Image (cartoon, rainbow, N blue to C red; front, side, top):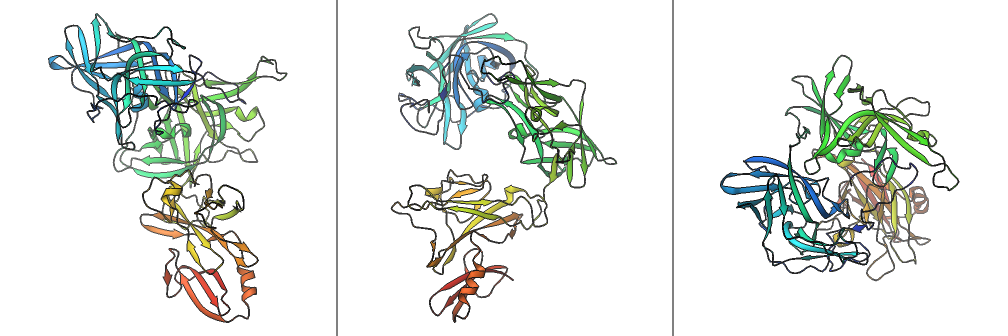
Length: 617
């Protein structure tokens, strides 16, 4: 269920389950019933506390045997719930001393969802007994764990329901030769989707609210087989490596559940040099798989600046599924077989080829740029040429299906651009942001929004790492007050307990989206909300943004980018007026005696009017 065959390039592919029903899964919402497939927690019974609050992740000592699986199951994948067979899943059993056994990934598919874990049982005659309530996953976020249970899933309309069997204390398997069969499970032949979604079997649930843990299986048969050798995935590099960071500048074409896409990459590439032997390691070599945070290993020629990376290295591996993502080289191409669907237009498809003859990928370091050599492709070309490419290709090891291809973009003259540009992670002065637009909801219902553009370079034009960026919002209320806007935690949902004045790049909020360059500023006409500023014929309110770049405690600030450039008009308006007093505020909003660095100067006149300008000293 993990991947699609090659699909129509220009279309979004509908995602379906094997039984033709698609359910959404979200544990975070606490509800007793799934409405319109938005949630799987449904009508749970109270279940006594059995959780051991521990997860066994290290393989226990003993004789290891590997097993393939057969049977039916309901399982979670990528936020959706599917019904199908267990044929694509695997499990291991360690036979320890004194009849103790340990079963890895006891539920079909749970290893991919929660990570590989073991549960403990014991052998009695030809039976394996596994006590229920053992933890297979612990979540610090929820403060709860997922534990083993027996339970029932069933369907009513488009909703999936789950009941925990609080009478069951253990799961029992019968050993017969090379097979091991789970006992006591059944499917209801009268169910609406039998045997796809409805059955009583081995399952799991969350201990904080007894909600469905995402896996239920029945008719399970384990058959002994030869174990698969786990390939090496590099997750740590030797100590003492010298690490450089590059910001991605490439193009990609990727294949997923929902279709085929192309576009520009972003994010970082880490390149680490082992100064003792000339080895080099690259982290996140494939942008489409950067969440793995794995490394590939190669060599570096100091005379030519060429990095050579052998193909065939694994970026990820799943013991539960026994396949992973492999680094390789290949090409994509677009073809048509005419108007097969009869809509009057040709249907286009994308094909791909893995180049088995290319055993090495070469990159070159030149000044502050990292080049991926030998690629072809232009995501800015007209369709279908924008889906033709040659470059670094990643694919699944079990069936060689493509996941993504990455290549250097072409500039307007047709020349390849760098794959990555060296990131300035040293303390730097960020370039100024721009305050682009203030959408005032006025008399409408809803929230006002402040749009801005985030700097991607320092003042010298060098790329900077966005993870070191933060910003504050300045408000001039038009009545003489200039202050920093405070983001109330209860309104801006940063998962923080305290209000904040400064927002960091890595903070996410449903109300403040730093990555998409806009902020909801929560001005409405509803009770309890006050205007942030008023700009009319009687007021000169303004709103601005300031960006900070902080590395190793050293902090540099951009200028404040005000939405309205009112300094010249303010000076003209205030010409000839008598100054009553002048006050200075630092970037933290604190009043200071004299200007120092970037300072807000607030002048009050004898007629009661004020003006505020920024000064640098």
